[in-house]
Amino acid sequence: MQKTATQIHAYAALEQRASLSKFDYEPGVLGSWDIEIAITHCGICHSDLHLVKNDWGFSTYPLVPGHEVVGTIAQRGPEVNQFEDGQRVGVGWQCGSCWSCEYCDRGEEQLCSQNQATCVGRFGGYADRIRLDSRFAFAIPDNLSSEGAAPLLCGGITVFSPLRQYHVTSNMKVGVVGIGGLGHLAVKYARAFGCEVTAFSSSASKEAEVKRLGAHRFILSRDAKQMESAKGSLDFIISTVNVSLDWQSYLVA
Ligand SMILES: [Zn+2]
Ligand SMILES: [Zn+2]
Image (tube, rainbow, N blue to C red):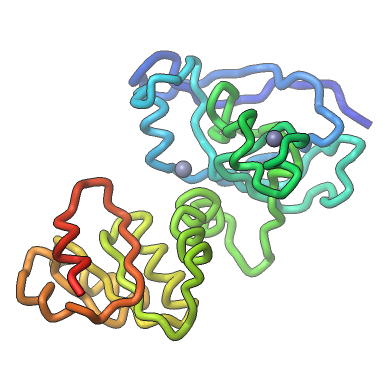
């Protein structure tokens, strides 16, 4: 049975670039496929900052950020049988689609023209609860901590997806360019895939950290000799930096 809606307590930017402040809203009716998640953890993704600042031009305010959500199921709509009450689940960037177009039919809901982002035009995960389509929630395995699982739901998938899409396998030598939030996850994934991992950074101070995370080799990208030494040694390079690089120095045979 659906319970009566009670206010959700969130944190919102009330206007462009504003600091977050307390903001309550009525969640509306719980749909047939919806779940209500009692949120315990939510990651901070750079896209949340872009949204608060309206860097992409489509933010609306009040804006409740948050799309790396982990919590437990507090309510389920009548169609939701894949989860149990109290089960720990996570939600990433996407939380809805039309379910009837050619893309949705073949399991590519991310390409649906009606795809719905978790905190764009609706209120996201910086809150005590959230309601959304259960078909965009994932069970969190018991061996993952909630604080460790939350950043995987957007940052993690951002680097996991290309490793999978380009069929990176354990016999490959993988380079990871940039050792920040995304790069450190890419190093850990590539290492877990069984790859030989080379980390590239413009900051020498990252070497010890990135080797602790699993990189076999560190290349200081500002050092032409070190770059030369890596020539022809990689099968696959993943770039996690949002600046234009000297691509030629990475791509020479
Ligand atoms: Zn669709
Ligand atoms: Zn994100």
